[in-house]
Image 1 (tube, rainbow, N blue to C red):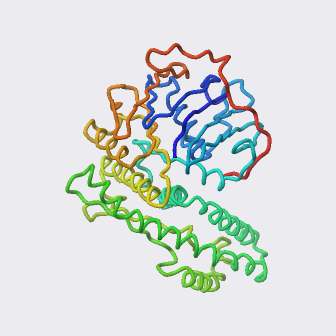
Image 2 (image 1 turned 90 degrees about the vertical axis):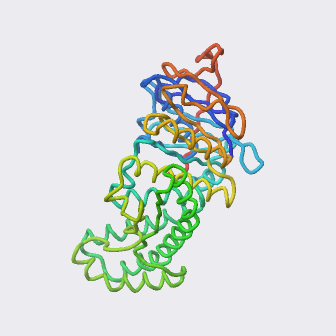
Image 3 (image 1 turned 60 degrees about the vertical axis):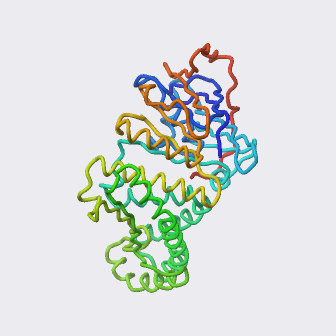
Amino acid sequence: MKLLRIAVAGFRNLPRVTLDVDAPLVAFVGDNGQGKTNWLEAVGVLGTLRSFRTPRAAELVGWGAARAEVEGVVSAEGMVRTLSWSFGEGARTVRRDDRPVDAVTWLSSFRATYFVPGDIAPVRGEPALRRALLDRAVLAIRPSYLAVARDYKRALDHKSALLRGGRASDAELDVFDAQLAPLGALVTATRAEVVAAMGEAFERAYGAFAGAEVARVVYEPWLGEGDEATLASRYAERLARQRPGERQAGRVLGGPQRDDLGFTVADRSARAFASQGQARSVVLAWKLAELEAARAVGEAPLFLLDDLGSELDPGRTARLVGLLGSLGVQIFLTTTDARYVPRDTVAGEVRVFHVAAGMASRAGDTPPDAASDAAPDSASDAAPDA
């Protein structure tokens, strides 16, 4: 899986321009505030259909622009495709080869994962942050999971609304419980399979940074263990038992939305005891395990790394780049210091763009004419949100 070319228009402070990024490692180098992370964010929007910096797509639209547009020419599974994402007037549009597609189809063609070195919240924060970390990994490895997770959330939201209203009949609640039991079982079973597939890779990746120190991860499902049929039956029984309590509380009381991940470092809870460096390494090891598990079942996603060198020491930075190179994934990174960018990789060329006021140019290049470069065509047909 590879991004060959990216074009932007109206995206944050970036000019209307196209970049050739057909290289194993692409680096955006520049001072803070110049737009290098905006370039990484544009790549991330293609790979995840959302920003890793904000949940509000409207914030991606540049000052004075009507729409934010990103287009990528990608290579995956032996095919070259053109993917176009745009946001304007409150609506998002996604097209593949100039045809509207849904998010599952898009992410089956192209996807990315990312690591922001300063983000240790999933390790130390609330379970919801770890569930989000887990679900992003499941989606990177099994894009079809998105449809299941959406259907489950939709049924859960409808049931929650009925309970809040306080007048739901048993027949109405039965309808949604009948949907939640099999969907919740499938969510749990899929999460369990992915964590099992990632476990050993996670331990190896953490060890690559911490030496003899051992880290582990376990899945802590609200439904417990079992095959899909067992989980569905168990969920149906629990839904029936907890209905009086749900009526009294006016809300849903249990389900896979209560799941958690348990990270340990040196046999102690990472949430309670991990240092900042340990917590950072836990998140990084998880991301590397995600890439390895994805590669085992198909093509691995791109890997995006923001602010290389800001949180990791030079030794760990070098080991990180070496590990990524060995996984055979395309890497996009940003840094304020070009000395952190490796001169070569296992896979070959390193392509460096220097960024100033949003413009990205390669060393020795004349900056492209922002007014004349190609940019994505506007699209109008909306596809479902990711």
